Image (cartoon, rainbow, N blue to C red; front, side, top):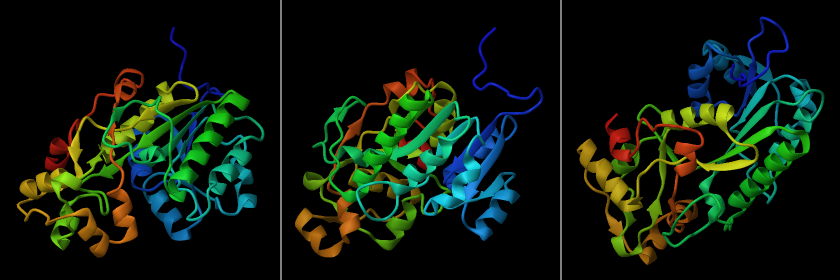
Length: 301
């Protein structure tokens, strides 16, 4: 008889999943698992707690920026999905530190999945690579993610928790707030010309939710996995494809020098890193069959 993914301390109790950072992707995960788990989500907002309850998720009041409010997390969950972003400044992720400190008390979760970012690699010059590549963060934002990953993997080793890190690229979906390129295209936001353009990576929000579920059940201890689809497109080509599918004008193309004059530093930062992600671990270790293997299928959906 196969061993169940999570043990059941009480005869009739469903295992409990704690989602930290239960936004759009977290709610997609909750919909996938609500018949199998009792789902609890941490939230510091009264309005958000009402929305979670309406979605069938039990809200738990707590604030990652106020560690004293997290005491109730100790021994609470059989599994934890951590999707909360780091704070907006500094090189360390104090939120992940506070969360793990709370989880370290009493019985620990059996599984912990952390949603990181592929920005931890910095610019890779368009190279294609797998998860064994060393991180090389170029911004404080990415350095905070590297710090969080290290804390999560240490937590797994120190307490015998099966901790898995998903490195996530750009998330899109037609029903996700701000998650479809049509809005950017409608604003006429430019892209880089072909000779200056960078490779970008993508995952549909539904496939990302399914990757989170797969990692909770099949992620290997302290393992890093690229949660990315099969697309290999440069950024400008991605937006031109979206424009054709949506019947919108293609974005204007600029040189890098022109872009530096017209775009914000944040926009430019996403145009300064080029990489192509191998996703064999996602397919073979997590055994995930992508519903939207390329952005063409996902944008059409």
